[in-house]
Image (cartoon, rainbow, N blue to C red; front, top):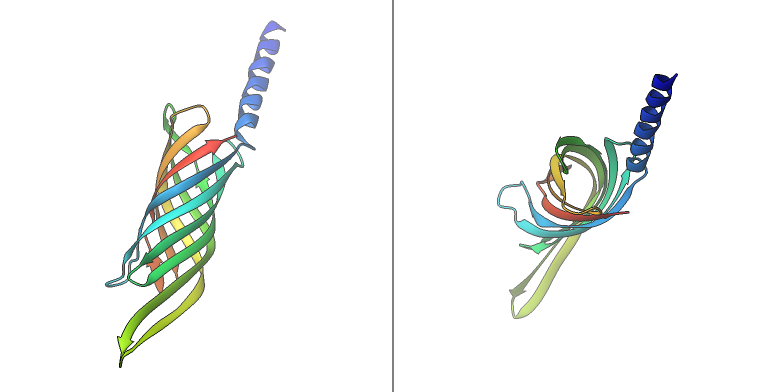
Length: 171
């Protein structure tokens, strides 16, 4: 009987520990660069915000809103939802492959002088996007984590490789 009670206590402790990870949430920021993979295209500086939700102890969902500042007349705004599969590799360190879907708006504008006048040309296009990538994170405090993430971001006729450094506060 004593062994059964100990086994039951260990099982309940495991369930409680798992419940603390699932349902956990976090807010964070991303900073980085996002090279556009088309010939002669620019590399943009990117800033963003993210919201994370721990679906289970190993699966996390993340919503991103990122803006890549204008470089060589091109700027990009993306909204995406990604799934992370967390793989612990050391104490406080996890790697995660990611995949997700979203929406991207690519804007471009240029000004030029012609015949004594200044002209501005601008337009944009919007596309659904697909993300696939790899990230790693380190918990450097109880509620704070830093991460590095590489994503291949595919939009029809437009591909990017965002490389982002992030900071997340978990609650």
